[in-house]
Image (cartoon, rainbow, N blue to C red; front, side):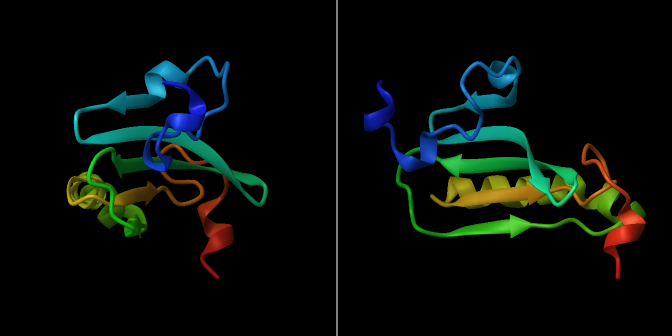
Length: 112
């Protein structure tokens, strides 16, 4: 399918030629998961996007896990919430805070 005919929900956030594109994207019959880094000031935040590929509806959520141990414990739940939104036709994005999990940066500098 050419780029012009792809729905907004299935267009990739990754650049063409990115060596990790194949590993960072996963498609099923009903949704697409894509993992990527995006800039936030001097930091690079890690995001996991879950988007419906059929029955797309105009809603979504951004899930920001808690800091510290609570965030680590609830991270899987956050992904399940984002996936549930995609299953309902929307888009869910899980963002990892600066300095946590795969994101770069200093978590202390962003808590003010």
